[in-house]
Length: 58
Image (cartoon, rainbow, N blue to C red):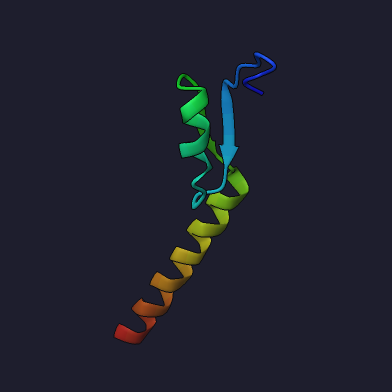
């Protein structure tokens, strides 16, 4: 992409991806967006873990 003189303005990734580090080397002005589906899944998993902890404490 760099050799073709393309410019990346937006990069969408999952929450645990390290690809941001690679892209920023070549396109320092780009924006990173979190994939909504991955964000929702991770949030649901964390809520489920908290719910289970609360049930044990009761």
